[in-house]
Length: 264
Picture 1 (cartoon, helix red, strand yellow):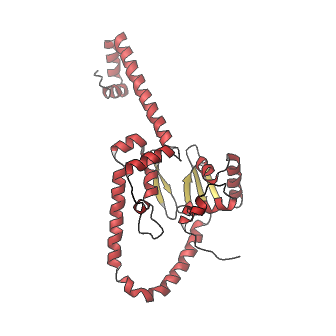
Picture 2 (picture 1 turned 90 degrees about the vertical axis):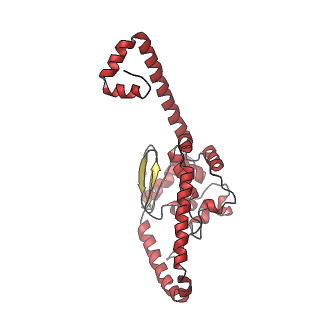
Picture 3 (picture 1 turned 180 degrees about the vertical axis):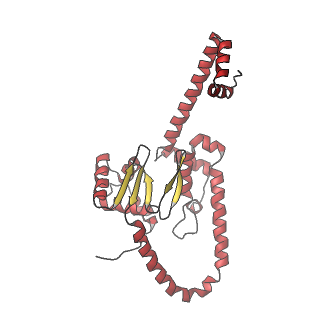
């Protein structure tokens, strides 16, 4: 068979596909195609801004196993098979898995070219609709404002401290994604959308492990702070004057202890 069909990204939100089951190889491949970026983008991974190109996706093997209901060995075999058939390129490190769909741009360019041909034929019959372009631009502006407002509601200081930027970024990307009609964002299609309650649920589910990683990071920082304060107390009691002179002579330690309220 030759040719192609258009497959909408919303297909996996259909109740038929949302049923809990073990994915077949075909379903897993379609999932990768649907979830790959349709345009170049950037997102926050830990404390680093990462560029993800068209046809790529950043995920984790843990997440893929959870999605496909597979074990680690089956997932590795499947990804190795796709690589051997030149269907994907794979880059794995300790933090993430980068998957690049081979020939994604080429395939999409063909589809775009065919769509342009169809659109040219339709243009003549839709000249009246085109007179509303100014209204459409106004709506696009409104969507941009709504997206900015959603971002501001999510990335407040309390939330950053409580959940971490990586989790908030994933939350924002998911809920600001536009629906099938390309007009409303995902959160706008909900009857009720409360950012705080949704964040609580998101952190509780923690599918990507971002919340757990944030809590561990917070724990380590807290322990380090406690150790520094305890050591300072011990040193002060043992030789407060000599310790002060020692801190004063070391620029890096001087800055560190000044931040803790110590005056040398």
